[in-house]
Length: 421
Image (cartoon, rainbow, N blue to C red; front, side):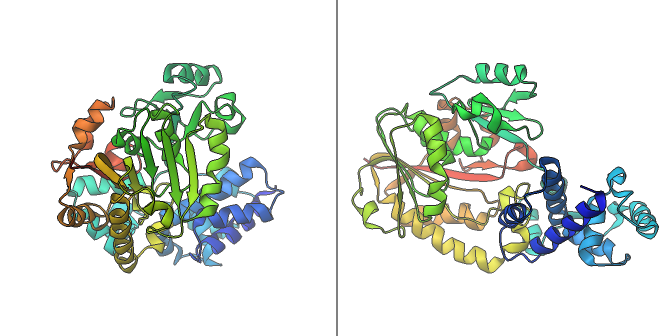
């Protein structure tokens, strides 16, 4: 495709995504379905440019004020800086000169808001938790893209064998530092074409998400519930921990998301998983399991602000009001899920948020209302599960807390309780 046509298409996509009326990945996927003429390299260029605009939106909107032409075109040109070989046949001499002038601006001298590219309410809540140098380290990490993490399916392979196979395929990879199942890959290779993937030896799953499953301590013969299963990444990890024995329920209110579990389940080799769509957290299917479950994982609906490397649109689509609504939903779901746990069983509450209002505040509220649950020390639980350097992942209060700039994972929070016998 001629660079000019590619630039025009990118501008159209950015205009659509910046409406912020749908998740960015949904808008990008829909755009690609409409433009099937695009090759893989062209799709990659369009998607990466769009996500770059979302990450640096405030900065580039400010710099764009000095340019001319449609705003989305100016934003796309700024996002494509450093790719002059692509742009040279697509832009005017005036645009080239303008881009050169913007490069000379000292970004470190700009106001904080243009440097961190976060809404004030998010920046303030992060700064309350982190010293200044760590805040800016987090900003730098969140401004980049996430690595590709895999979880080795222990039912079908071992990490050493998978690493060897990736090396033979010419794909640089290394063991993740914490999860005993994890592998990290640089770049975005076409995994779907590898036998490792099609045969179910690996699944794509962030290392932090793997640790949430490990925190449950699920084992052979257990009755386990993944309460907000979604597309089932943690469900599959739990099933492998259980060695395909016992019974594993995957509940979610979204039938569409559960549909995404089916092909993954088929590849995994698991036969102990029972996906079920529920109407709400008090569904009759749940009531029938009251007091019968060994392990319950509640990866609650949340703001997703720990995943900004993958979903940078979330910082523009979330709000303090949305957080308040999510809090109500989180405590309702956690309280309902807790009824399933049998005496001596374990309950894990988790989010992919960096905001205490969705994390520690919910845990504190639940603990105050449910004295029959005793908090476990996440470090001890993780060490027992074979997690390396577990002490670096746990807060003084004994909660799991993963930060993108510290741990190279998405941002995660989790707390585990045991129900008194």
